[in-house]
Each structure stands twice: as structure tokens, then as C-alpha cells.
Length: 302
Image (cartoon, rainbow, N blue to C red):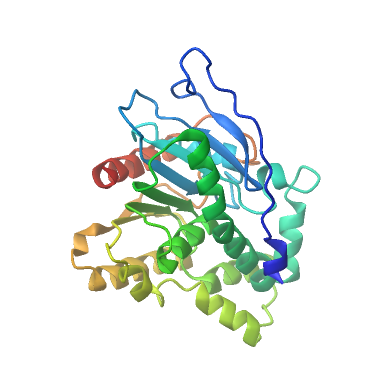
């Protein structure tokens, strides 16, 4: 069913260019849609000679729950690269009636088959076309691409790594959804009722178990340095999954130190305060995460 939902729509918007310099002003954010996907783009915060690398990020469904809000919470200004924040389905500019009720309804109706699976699959399927269109607009260097994801957006980044279709130079995940079954378990707890697992849901969950798929991630022609940021106050199941993924990848990597876990004291699951839809001032704990991720990307993106 999700395949019908994710047919790409080409929606071309006009990006205003500084006509006197022939480029976008340094550090000035740009918003719009690319291949139907809402985006917020932050140009390099300093002058860069030649095409700059690009960091592509997918936001949380928790706060910050839009591309613009994630860009404000995790601007990665210390990375000399274009920073592209892509909107998840039914979030940001694709919200229904300006809110998240449609997302909540899907999670209540079927946490696996109406929420986790189609959201991650659609975002991953939309990525190549959106990246190609944005590259044409902004001229960044996609041979030096990093991927970043928070929570369910982390599952999107992991999908990109596991499918091995897009060259990736570095990756960073923040409180990621490493195993879909753990996300469904959180929804079960919120709804106070068990999820009715069936064969279809189990198969979908298997595809979104990245500990089980760690061999696919490590089988890339060039193994991707990966940082996993896990909050000490995040959900216990997600912290366990983070530990398991790091352990599984370190066992498979030729250079185990290319996979690192950063456990952050005082970090719960979200990176921003509610409602987390509009950009907001960066929280001190988010600044700590931002600095940690930026240092990793500068080291490995090149």
C-alpha cells in the first residue's frame, strides 16, 4: 500500500538567489520543496572554496518534529557543509490541518503498518530524487554526503546505509529507532494495549531491525564511520538497541573505532520543547548534541 502513497510529485519552487553574487547568502536558510519533499537548507556558515559537502538530516516525530524545527535544534553550524533537513511524511509542510493528529491516528490504528513502516519507507524512497533536485539547485558535492537522523528519522538514515545505493561518507544518529519492534512497544505502552502482530507486520519489523541488518550496513564498499548519540534519559529499550547496534557494527568493521557510542547525561528522547513544530531557540542539551555530532562530521566528512 505504501508504494502508492510514495509516488513522487515534482513540485518546483523558486529559490531566490543573490543576483549580485550569483549565490545564496552565506548561512541564510532556504525553505521549499524538492520532489515533493519539504526541506530547510542551511548553506555553509563560512566561505568554502569549491563545491561543499552536504549533510542530509531527517527529524524526529517527537520534538523537533519538522524539518525547520530540527534545523533550529541541530544546525551543525560547525560543519563546513550544506545542511539539508528533509521533512518526514505528514510533518512540517505536509501536516494535515496544521497539526500532528493524522500521525497520532495512524499510530493508534496500526503502529507498525500504518505508522513506522510507511513513514520510514516513504522518507527513504523520496530521498534520491529530492537529493538530486537539491544538488542541481545548490551545487553541493554529493560525493561527500553525510546522513543524520533523530528517532524515527534515524531509521531512515539507517535504511540509506543498509540499502547501499547512495554513497555516504559519514553518519550520525540521535536516539535512533534502531528496532521497529521497540517503537511499537513504546506505542503499546502509551495506548495501554498490546499490538496485534501478524505475518505482514512481523516481516516489516524485520526489515527495520538494523541490529539484524548490521551485516548489510558493514558490507558497504567503504564502511561508513557512524556515531550513535544516546541519551541517558532516553527510553530504556532504545538505549539497549543503541548498545546492541554499536556492538554488532564494531564486530564487523575493519576499524571498530569508526563506530562510536556517545552517551549523553541529561538527554531524554526529544531535542526541543513542545510543540516542536516551529523553529525554537536551541536548548543547552541540544547544543551539546549539536557540538558532538558536528565534531564527528568534521572529522570524517572531509
